[in-house]
Each structure stands twice: as structure tokens, then as C-alpha cells.
Image (tube, rainbow, N blue to C red; front, top):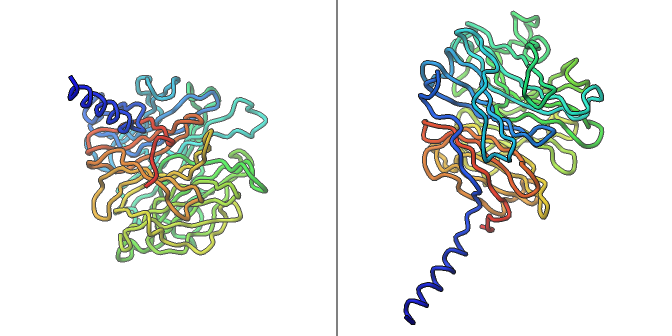
Length: 381
């Protein structure tokens, strides 16, 4: 009995020490289910009333980027514990629609309950062909004023945010284009409060070795989507998919994929003018990455606030989906949590409430999974 008591005490201690930051895990999209063979490119947002909306590309025939691709959405009204059935939002016939980038406009006096924007791209050819000048990529958005229940007809803004010879500017030969992908953002501080901002990337002119004609940039509106402007390019060759977060000092940070894979690190660009221009970009040595998208979020918790990063924690493979937390706005990363050890790729982050965040990520090239997490339960590294 004495030995049994010792074993029982050790078991209780072990249980107490192994408390996981994970609150719940839900598979939202499984390849081969419904009319789609593949689901990719997750995006995640919370509406004014607290509803979570998860967006995804539904790829009809295979997992290729170009083809018959639709945009779908699922919603949760209980903080991510249960979810609605998928809803079809945008169908571009047999062509591509993708790169969902949702954002909530909370400052438009015409919509006191907030207005959701969902930005997306359409394409007439593969990325390779568009880089060569054969085909085009366009940019559009739809809106919702009832927390994502119904959506407007599309508004095409290509000529305002993505220029090329066919849309009015032969001097700016921008060919490929991609919204963030993942959530966009609305600035909340200082002179640029209310600005809707969508990080993006394009290719400039003829293809170069190692994708060095790629550049990250952003497009934005200061009048609730009535007119649009573009930033200058981030001045780093091969800068590609980007996602942004507003820091407490009002700076906008972009976290950027390096398409040529030379540094195996994430590229960081900061802006003091609301994302119109960029200070000296740098590679963050603490954020290793294969050539892949990642996500970024400023989490304002009840007890602590963190800049949160999610992405594959590997230099060579899309694997080890990991969250990293910074308490000094990205100068250092104080703690981390491996969400999934296996193959994992694109992800997006959302703040659910003052105690929880959510991550939606691609797992094993088979499914897209939502995990609810308590950041305070993540121990320091």
C-alpha cells in the first residue's frame, strides 16, 4: 500500500505538470470530403459579435494552386468548439479564386455593427504562366454586414491595387499577385486609425532566377473601401507572401516569406506611416522557416500581451507547426509551443477572447485543423 501511495502521488504530480495549452482540436476540412479533393490556404477572423469565421480554398480536382478552385467558409459561435457546415462564398466557374484575406471594418459610421471585407484573387493561368506574361491575376472583395451570414456581390479593385499593361499602366508591369494570404487588418492607433490594410505581393517584369522579381507590398483604404492606394515595395528581392500586425507603438510590422529560400529565415519590415513606406528590413534569426507562408497576430490578453507567430519550425521541411510568443514586439521570442510535430504548412491566427487564441493550419497535406490554445499555459523556453 505504501508503494501504491507513492505511485499515486507521482501520477497526480505528473498529470499536473503535463497540462497542455491546447483547449480543443477540430478538423474543419478533410481532403476528399464534399465536392472537393483538396482544401488549402486557411484564413481566420472574429466578427463584432464574437463569431469565428474560417475561410478556405476548396480545390475541385487536386491540390494544385491553379484550377477549379472555390472559396468556402465555416463559422463558430462558441469560441471554436463547434462549427457550421461549409458555405460556398465565391465560385469562378472552372477557374481559380483564392488567397482569402478577411478583415473587419469597425470604424465606418454607416455600419455600427461592423462590416466584413473578404479580399480574394482570381486567375486565368498558372503562376508560372502569369510570371511569363501569359494570363492575369485580379483582385476583388465581397462584404457582409450581418456577421458573415450573407455577402455582397463582388467589387473588382484590380486597376487600383495591381497594375500591369492590360489594366492601365505599362510602366508598372506587375504580373503575379497574391493577397496576404490569411487575415488582413485595420489599424487602430494614431494618424492612420481606421485604415484597412492588406499585405500582398506581386512579380515585377520578366522572370528572374530564384524568383528575384517578387516583391512584397501592401494596399490600403482610408475611406472604408471607396478608394485604394498602394505602398512602395519592400526593397528585398524574392520577398513574397506577407502578413501584418499593428504594434502597440502604432508601427505596422510585416512578416514575409523569402521565396528563394536563401536565408531560411523570416523577413521583417516595419512602417511608421501606416504601411506606405518601409524602414530597413531585416531577417529575424529566431524565426527559421522553409519556403512557406506564416501568420502573425498581436494578442492582447487579460494578463499579458504577446506578438504571436505561427509557422513550420524547420529550415528545410514544412513540418513542426509552432507558435512563438514575444513580449517585446518581436525583438526576442520568450516562449514557444509546438502545435503539431508532423507535416504542416500554411496557418492563420485569431484572438478568441482575453484568454484564448485560435490557429487554423494545414496538416499532413490531408486536412485543415483548428486548435484553441491558452497562451498563459505555454511555459517560457
